[in-house]
Image 1 (cartoon, rainbow, N blue to C red):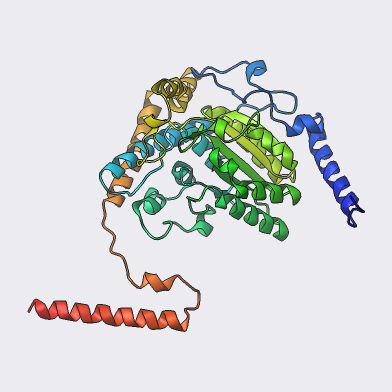
Image 2 (image 1 turned 90 degrees about the vertical axis):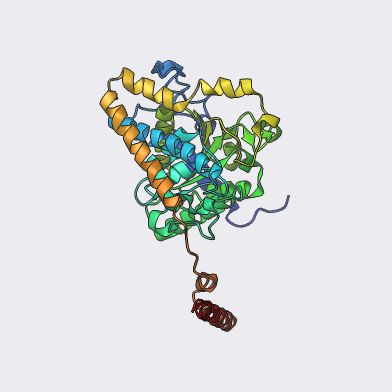
Length: 403
């Protein structure tokens, strides 16, 4: 194999020390730290009852404290609003107000937890299915849905909100997220990046490149994989032979964890710890959420061609909204008045969406040239001048014709 390059042994020792230090933090071996626990972390059962600690899927070094009641109530409100948003957007597609909508109905717990686990200076890089996460981060719903009405831009300012534009290519956003994390580390900033993707995206080359780069440079990135069982029509079994997607993390030298993606309590606990570890210098982590896409891939898809209704009904019983409601009710954190207030907030969001997307947008033709380069080229300036002249002549002709 030849002589290793200068410094290779030192880099290997540094990597080993880095993993040993992290494992010692939890009093476990490096292997136990890197590998996910046996089964998914689940704090609430499917009825919304709190599971005994010994049955939550935890193991030494993988214990998760119960989030505060106030945090859970805030998360539940975002969950209900997210469900209403999904239903409203599906209706807007049928009305012709949006070109396409990839619903996250059934996955809202993942979306809400992703947004609420981050700090004010942290970045989130969502996929095309993560509109609820984007809105939960505080972005106006109409701005969020601008992309899906067929506009030419993403609708919101990524730098202002620290949220990347929703990505239709499966994994390009992971590379962008890793780049932001690398820049933040070089500048000494206290920034964590949450990079989101689906199970199908783990088959892409960009997934490998993003995880490998992040692990080698010990970047503060949490890779959040929402495993909803299908990459459009391709089931998970045709995507990977690994025991789980979380197990892929160990091949890159980072920790992986599996969590019940319909258990909002567990999601908040797992993602918050992952963000905290990344912020404290323990490098990147991968979290796989086991969930389900209740509706079709998009409004252009016919899900009945590749999955059975019995499977959908099985997951319907695991609905994250009813599970969370039952738990909060049982703990007297949620009452009728709280339900009414939350339902009103959800309806207000739906109204904001309807009203905003029912407004016709008058495009400005000069936008074709305005955002291509910071300093327009001579050719662009000439093209713009010709267009402005042509539009002016058309307007003059129209005015003359009305006299």
